[in-house]
Image (cartoon, rainbow, N blue to C red; front, side, top):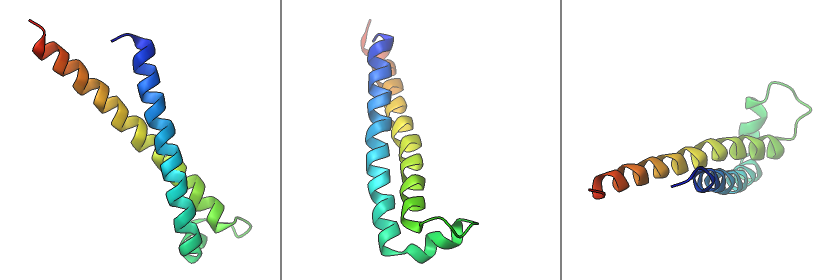
Length: 83
């Protein structure tokens, strides 16, 4: 597997995680804005926006990590099956 394909897989996983995490954060900030107003130390931040940013950041980390784990497993599987 070449480095361009690895980069594309991990980047795609991180972008998918960002979209899903951002949507989850948007929904959570819409449903429970009081929770996120206590997390943010200043008062001039919209809780829905803060929840969306937090969800997107977490999604990038989780999606990129999961894609990197998939690349590692694929590498190990190829080494195992190749004589």
